[in-house]
Image (cartoon, rainbow, N blue to C red; front, side):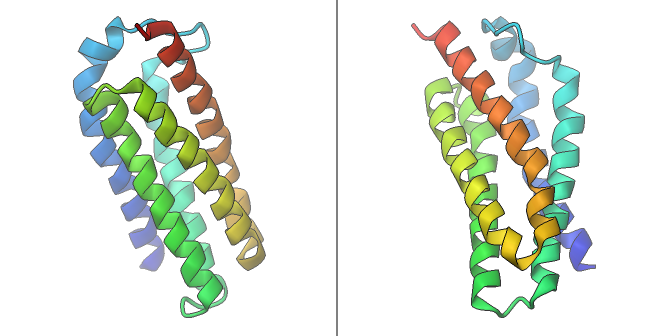
Length: 155
């Protein structure tokens, strides 16, 4: 039951972000200049759905591995949920507020939080840390994409 809750929380963040994304995709985002490595729009939904599921499993593994009451587990999960908040903010900043430069600052901060969470998760549950690596890889790519879109469209 806890596993499902962790996954639903993570997927819920993605669902909230998708409200801003869907609204801007056909209008504002479509008009932006994008780099050649910009993936097709249909790819983002499945990738993020999988990543949010892996994040939920990862947090669940940490919560189950050593007991939720241990200080290092509490701190690791606190940082996990903090990075999840920063993750959710990106969609609002980029697609909702249309502030590409602030979204870039947010995603760089997100990248740093993900690295920190991985280092916090690894000693508690090595598998949980490994499950966060695809997320780190995708956010690394998304950071480069965000930067490129900002450079191509800054006025």
